Structures are given as C-alpha cells and as structure tokens.
Length: 247
Length: 343
Ligand SMILES: Nc1ncnc2c1ncn2[C@@H]1O[C@H](COP(=O)(O)OP(=O)(O)OP(=O)(O)O)[C@@H](O)[C@H]1O
Ligand SMILES: [Mg+2]
Figure 1 (cartoon, protein in one colour):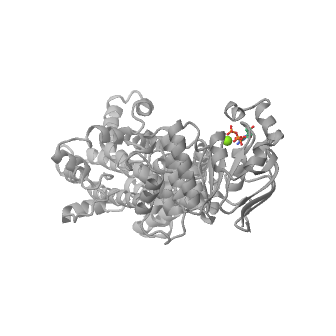
Figure 2 (cartoon, helix red, strand yellow):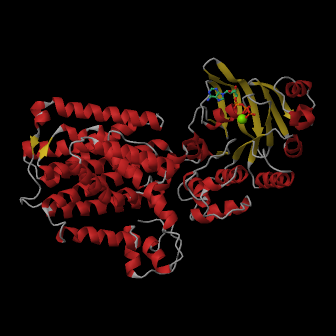
Figure 3 (cartoon, rainbow over the protein chains, first blue to last red):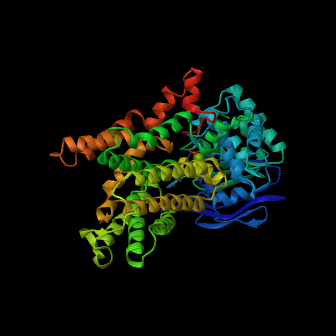
C-alpha cells in the first residue's frame, strides 16, 4: 500500500526553484532514504509535504487523501511526524514537558489517557539518557535530536520523516541509532529519512530517492540507486559530500 | 508540575489551589495590612500603593502574552484605556453602574484583543508587536480627536466607584483584583492551554508539527489578556475620576513592560512582586528630582538593559537560583511551597 505520494511537487523561493516537479512514493513499512548533495532541496521537499512550507504547485497524497498545502498541525493529526535537521525544541520546558506537548496535541482527544505516562514511555523507547526534569536548553545537539525524536513519536505517527537524525553521532552511537530506527519501523511506522551517512543508508533503507538541484534524478531499490551513475556523479561533482563519495 | 500524590494538609492544598507559595501569601498579608500602619496610612502613600498594585496587575496580564506566547503587546495600555473610556462613557452617558461599566470595559477590550489577535496571526513576534502598537496609537488618536465623546485632552469627569474621599477601599478592591488576575492567569498555565501557549511562544514550528493550532491559542491568549486590561481600565477610570488620553500613551506600556521584564518574563509573579518596591522607588525619585522630568523613563531603560544582559529571566530567575535551591527545609518550604512552580 502506498502511504505517501507526491506528483510534480514544486517549491519556489522567489526565483530559486528549490524543489522541481518531484514525483515519488513511499510504500507502507518502507524505510526510504532521501539523499542528495547539500542544498539539493531535501529539507524543502519534506517541509512542503509536512506543511511547514506549502508547495508552489503539484500534489501530495497522504494515506490515500489529498493533503496538498495542509497545515503542519493537520498533517500531524493525520499521522505524520517529523524531526528537525537543527533540533530546537521548546527550550524553557523540561524534557518531559517537551514530549508531553506532542502527546497532548498530536493525538485525537481521549486517545491517550495519561499524557505523562505516555511521554515517559516514549523517552524510554528512545533510551533518553538524561533526567526528565532537565530543562531542554541545557542539552547538547545529540541529546536534542533524541528528544526531538521522542517528541515526534509521542503523536503516534504512521509516517515519520527524519531529517539527518544521525549526523554528528560517534561510531558507537550510530549503531544504537540504527537499531532504534529499525525498532521504530517494527512498531509499524513507515519512515522517510534524509541522510548523508552511507553506512546508515545502505544498512537501513530498502528504497532510495535521490535529488539534485531540486530535481529527482533516481528512485528505486537501494542497490539500483546506489549504483546509478547519475547518483555517483551527483555526489562526486561540485557540491559533493566526502562521506558519501567515499562510500 | 506537581506530581506528589501524598495528601496535602488543608493549608498547603489552599496554597496549591491558589498558586501561592507561603512567602507569596505572606507578602500579600503585608500588603493588606500596610494601609493601617504608619507611615503608609497617609493618603499620598496609599495612592502610591494603588499605583503599584495597578502596575502589578497590568504586568501580570501583560506577561501572560509577552512571557508565554512571546508577543509584546505594545498597545496594551491603549487597550486598557479603551476599557477605561468604554466604562466611563457608559456610566456617564447612559447611567450604567460603574461595576457593570468595568465589565463592559473588559468586553470592549476583549473584542479589540480578538481583532488584533486575528490580524496579527500570520505575523512573527516583532511584526505583531508593531501592529499592536499601531492599534494603540490609533486608539489614543481616537480618544484625543473624538472630543464630543471623550472631551479629548480636556479630560472627562467620571464618577468614582466608592462615594468616599478615602482611597483605602479602592486599594483593597484593586488588591483583590490583582489576586484574582494572578490566580486566573496561573491556572490557565496549568491547563493544556497553558502548555500550548508556552509551546507556540518558544518554538512555533515545533509547536505546529506537534499538532498545536496556533490560531486558536494565540487569539485566546490575546483576548484574555486584553479583557483583563479592559477591566483594569474601568477601575482606573472610576478611581481617578478624570480620564485623559495620555493614559493610553506608549510610555505607559513601556512602564508595564519594564516592570514585567525586570520581574521576570513568563513567571507571572515576578512583575507583581517587584512592582511595589519599584513604583515606590520611582515615586521617590520623581518627587526628589522634580526638576528632571522623564528621569524615570531613563532609569527604566537602564534597568531593562542591565536585566537583559545579566538576568534575562529577571528577578524571578534571580530568586529561583539564589533562594529556591536552598538546602534549609524551612526556607525551602517558605520559598517553594509544595508545588514548585508557584509564586
Ligand atoms: N526559506 C527559504 N528561503 C529561500 N531559500 C531557501 C529557503 N529554504 C531553503 N532555501 C534554499 O533552497 C535550497 C535547498 O535547501 P534545502 O535546505 O532544502 O537543502 P538540503 O538538501 O536539505 O541541504 P542539506 O543537506 O544541507 O540539509 C537551498 O539553495 C537553500 O538555500
Ligand atoms: Mg536539509
């Protein structure tokens, strides 16, 4: 079953076409990798789907319904969650309050009886290492990303977008993160992950979408896309990313 | 968050319900007996007390918007003035009772808050602040120009709430209003609505992706804060007995802002706590340096700059770091009460 489909999705910022007529789809249970060099338009594409930056033209179909241009809060209630590339949650709130916000407002009223208990479960699920009463502005980036993930999970999504969740992690932390992402998938969540780290992409994703200068240049199984000469060239040429190019 | 499940004794329960710490309650008692103790029983000092309680109440409601949803309502005193004029006009022209007038003032201000909230919805904090300011200027302009209705700068005579020359009843009424305003605002912060306010104030994008509809919450916040301002305006009109457009001036809002920020953004209680010493200090300075008009505004500016640099969380932050963390059990109870998030 297709959970998400975009048709000719385009996003322009003034004269700059950040996303250019991208059509792609995600099947239920997939872990799809969205790859492409820096500035390719990956975050913009995700924002256009999730409603933070509505698309200029094109169509988004989520869970079989047309959702083009819906607000982020509506998309959230429909079962779409996302983490941020640069996570800045609610800085003055505690860790627990951060997660509770999504537990309270991201679910239909009455679905979750005890928001605090549900949020603690989410923190436990992502193995959050810091005490729940810590004010979140005291956390470092790696911790903030994990907190952002717990927040995104608290609204019980069916589809989850991860924007460079693993960047900045050490080798050991990377292994944990891979396990965590698989664990999320095994709970029935379909995942679209923007990622530069080849090790993660090759190990986790069953399908890949590659964009360059806002245009989709490849879509297919991980092997197909990884071996596509256009993709290799995109990474090696110009704005190439050394990590990816080395892989 | 108060997650202690043990049963509280009735006193603590009352404190918890009213969102006061033992120290907060103690300060309130002191404020309540002050007008009976020399030298504070002199009329001019009671007037100072009323000014302070007025600014304190305004600061609480102002902080409800500025501190929680992070939008500075630069037109706040103009909206208070709208409440004042609404009440004054209804009472003087239509013979309404001043009590109903105050209520009507609150309604008019709430309507204005609804309008400003709707119009500024799509705007980011600073632009919303500017727009609220323009609204304030327009309101003040109207109060000045509609001479047939407001008598403009000549001032409008208004009946006082209590038919006595003494100001003491006004002080107690205002003190009660301040407590009600504080409890109302604090209660809201404990509900899901309060969580939504803080979330949209701290990170709009994360709030929206977490499922919060900013339209509803932003407008509700504006409406409540403006309604409080309007009722306070009604009080003001029926206390002073004379109403001129300059109560709507931006410099009055700046005074409220200074008290709220120096007291501590988002704390609600900080502004109320420092308003009293602060207004007294300002009045003393004003009366001893009467040849330097406007010196109080200079001082506000300097103090604000110092607070922004050294203590962005204001007096509340200072208090939280140096007093609330105390190891002494008695003191800790005094400063924190049983629930850690209260005044
Ligand atoms: N709000 C905006 N206004 C104007 N231009 C923008 C905006 N957001 C993104 N862009 C531009 O759109 C292009 C795509 O940016 P985007 O952040 O989507 O890239 P990305 O693929 O996520 O890159 P990275 O891997 O560095 O995160 C860039 O040229 C960027 O400068
Ligand atoms: Mg990006």
